[in-house]
Image (cartoon, rainbow, N blue to C red; front, top):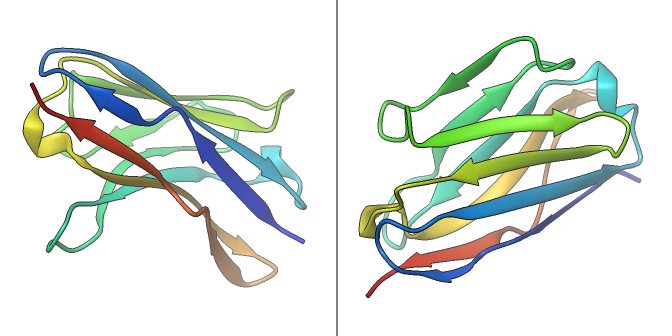
Length: 117
């Protein structure tokens, strides 16, 4: 049974930082790319960052480039999202995602990030 469990969200002031974690289980973690998505209230879900199976390549949405960093620790079955210089418009539920495990896509329940003074 594939499970993705996010943590690390919370309330932070503009300009602050947070690190999100997503612990995966139920599949061979180091065989799959991982993604972080976010969804703000009233908006469509947005792909934030992507990392290949061994972390050799990463990609980011233009809105978070040079502020967010995705990484992974395959020994811990965990993918991270380091978020710096946070802005109010980064407020959203952040979810991790894996695609193509036995032909299906899986999502975590998400963790809420609120950027506000």
